[in-house]
Image (tube, rainbow, N blue to C red; front, side):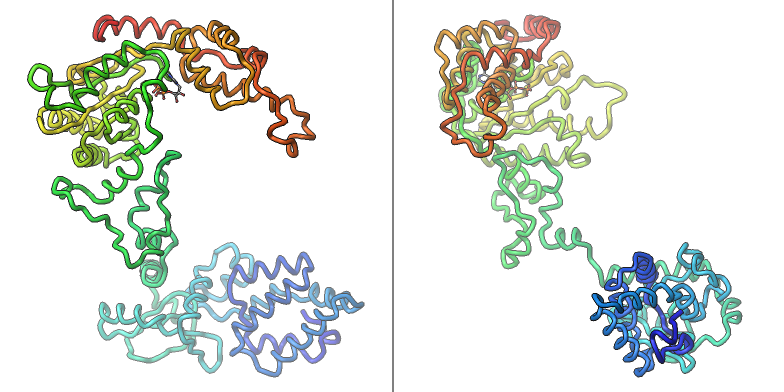
Length: 570
Ligand SMILES: Nc1ncnc2c1ncn2[C@@H]1O[C@H](COP(=O)(O)OP(=O)(O)OP(=O)(O)O)[C@@H](O)[C@H]1O
C-alpha cells in the first residue's frame, strides 16, 4: 500500500475506486520482479505503461497526481529522496492492488482467483493476454459501474467474416472469454456472475474461444516464415539444404526486393513443361556444379582409368557422329574404390573435357533430403540435364540409391530407384541424348544387379601409387612458400604408402601449419605474412605423426576382388 504521508493525497481507496487494471499477466509479473529488485526506473516505466493503457479508467486528477509524484521522485533519484522512493515501492502492495482491480470474471467466479498466485499459475480460465490484443484493435465499452467490460468484436474484417457465418447474431467479446448474445447491438454488462455461470457451457465456450483466436491469428497475423514463403516460394526448398561453396547465393529477400519480377522461373523448354519450376530452379542453383574446370593433369596417377574414360566416354561425347553402331558409347559408368581417391575429380574432369554440364548429386540426399520428393527430383534432374546437353550426371554414393532389393526396403526409396532406372533406360535408348551417368561408390558389392548391368564400364579407382602421391604433393605445394626439394617430396611419397588422395591433401594441410605454429603466440596477430617461414621437410615428418591413412588393407582386398569379378580387370 502507498503510505499516505509519503505520496500525499493518493489514497489506496482512490486507486481501487478507479479500477486500476494492470494490463496483462506478464506486465504484472515484470512489475513484481522490478519491485523485488528495487529497480526504480523499471518500476516507473511499467507503472506508466499500465496507467497509460488504462488512462480512460482513471480519474484525471488522480492520474496526474500519481505521475507527477513519480516523476519528481525519479528525477531526484540521486538525492536523499531515493530512500523515500524505494520505501514507497517496497510498501506498495502490488498483489493486493492487482487482485482488487480485477473485474468480475464471467467464467471464473471471483472467489476462484482471490489468490493472485492462482491467477499467475493459470488456474483462472481467463486470458488477459488475448484481451489485451483485442483491446488494441477494438473499442471498449464499459458499463456504468465499471466492473464488467465487454469488448465489441475486433477488426472489421473479422467481424464481417463472423457475421457472414453467424448471420444476424451480434458477437461481443467479454473482457474474459467470449460471450454470444442473441440480442442485436446490445452491449450487456454482467451484473450477476452466478447467473452467467449457469448459462455458459464451459467446454463449448472454450472451443469457441480457441477457434476464434485461431481465426484472429489467421486474419491478422503472419509469422516471419509465412511472410518469407509468401514473398519467395523458392526459399522453401533452399532453406536447410547444404550449399556448396560455389553454389549461387539465393537471397531470402529476393521476393521482397524484386516485387516487380515474377518469382516463378519462366519455363521455356517444352521438355520442362511438366516439371515443377521450383525443382528446376533448385537443380540449376544447387546441383549444377559450376566450379573450376578440372584437367587431366589435375588428377594424379590413375593412368589406365583416365585412358579408358577418354576413349569410352569423352571422345564419343565430343564426336557422336563417329561413335555410332558398335562404337556407340556406354551411357553409364561406375567408378568404385576406396574413399578419397579422386572419383569425383574424374567426374568433373569428364564434364570439363566434353564441355558438358556437370550435375552432381549425392544419392543419399535423394533418399533423405528430398524425402517424398525424391522421385520428382530424379525426373526433374534428367529433364533439366536433357536441356543442357551434353551433360554428365554424377551420382555419388550410388549404392545407397541402387541397393539390392530387400523386404525391408522403404516404399519411398523403392519408388526413387524405379524412377531412376526408368530415366536411365530412357537416356540410354534415346539416340539423340548426349547424357552420361557417372556413378561413384565405396561399396560396389552392395549394388543392385540391375544397376550393375546398366553401368556398363566399371572402373576401379585405386589408392594413388608413389608416383601419384608425389604428383599430389607437388600440385598442392605449387602455391605455397616451401623449401622442399624433389628428393624430399619423393621421400614423403615413400613414407605415405596406403594414403588416399584425400589423406595426402590432409597431410599437406597439416604440414603447412608447421610454419604458423612456430610463430610465437604473442606475434601471431601482428606478424608480416612474408616473415612466416617456408614449409620444410621436417613439417612433413611432424605431420606424418598426426595424419594416418584412412583406408584399411581389408577394405582394399574387397575392392580388388570385386574388380576381378565385375570390373574392367585392370
Ligand atoms: N588422384 C588424385 N589426384 C589429385 N588429387 C586427388 C586425387 N584423389 C584425391 N585427391 C584429393 O582428394 C580430394 C577428394 O577427392 P574426391 O572427392 O575426388 O574423392 P572421392 O573418391 O570422390 O571420395 P569419396 O568416395 O569419399 O566421395 C580431392 O579434392 C583432391 O584434393
